[in-house]
Amino acid sequence: MSTDKAVDPSIFANYVPLNALRPESRGDLARKSIIRAMRSGEYLFKIGEDAKNAMFLISGEIHLEDVNGKAIARLRAGDPTAHHRIAHQSPRKVSARAHGNIEVMTVDAGLLDVMLTWDQTGSFEVGELQSGGDSGSSDDWMSKLLQMRTFQMVPPSNLQAMFMRMQEVKMEPGQVMVKQGEDGDYFYAIMSGRCIVTREQPNQKPIRLAELETGSCFGEEALISDAKRNATVTALTRGSLMRLSKDDFRKLLNDPLSRKISLLEAQKLVDSGKARWLDVRLPSEFQAHSLKGSLNLPLYMLRMKLNMVEPGVTWIVCCDTGRRSSVAVFILTQKGYDAYVLDKGIPPAA
Image (cartoon, rainbow, N blue to C red):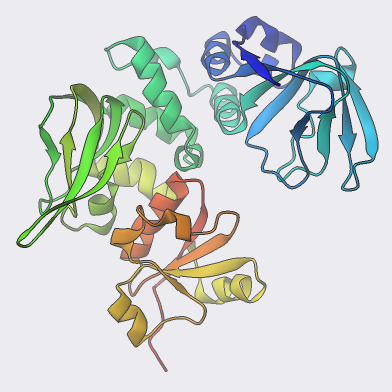
């Protein structure tokens, strides 16, 4: 049975590329990492799995195995090759199994990549990003944001500017932070506390859509689509938010994430089986005209029905103009999906 313990950042000096990080980055990453004790015969990972974590051998010996379970290489702690990540390609090309009792350190691969990029470009200074409140909570919400694929795809200089332009807003229980029907003005990230998302319906009780916690984001839909707020967000507890203005959001976040693809390129991917269509229009629009083989999931249902969207597949998101698709791609990317906007929208029926 595996057990975990905290990581002393000084150990990073023995491993590549962890030793390339600045001391401040090592400390931040160490808090999000663990050292796991594993027994002989336990698998660290298996062929085909996503390499969400970078793994480093601390003690003992592991065997790398092929699809038939045959050992094709062995790795011993202290060997030169053990100073590097263990078979870190994604998806995994081999399986790794403990040969005797071992200790292995696991590090969030996405966060490591972001920190390496920032440190190597010299554009990231942790001290500049503190919001003036409790540094622990600040580290926590920033780390959660940075572990989202959305933010890992944004250029480091944009991320630095985003954090420095964000403003802190305090919230009290019951306070409405975003009101359905109002114009969108800010993008929000929860630094501490919890919020509830509801949608008003004529002559009916509000529908509870979601509960948001530290590190969650909201408000992007209205900014991307330039439409009214489609839900109300209310504080459940005392806490604080960080907000980014509409103009800054579009310039620093949305524009770099505008992953557009032409109809010709998209059709080739779909025909090859590498991608699928996701139509985010209303069912009535979908029934009138749609692309063959499309999955219809209206934008307003996307967050609640994400289990219908198969992970590991490239999704070409479409609507009539590309506006709703852009919102959907932002949401999907936030959740770790590979998604593109169909440029210029669905072509008219022949």
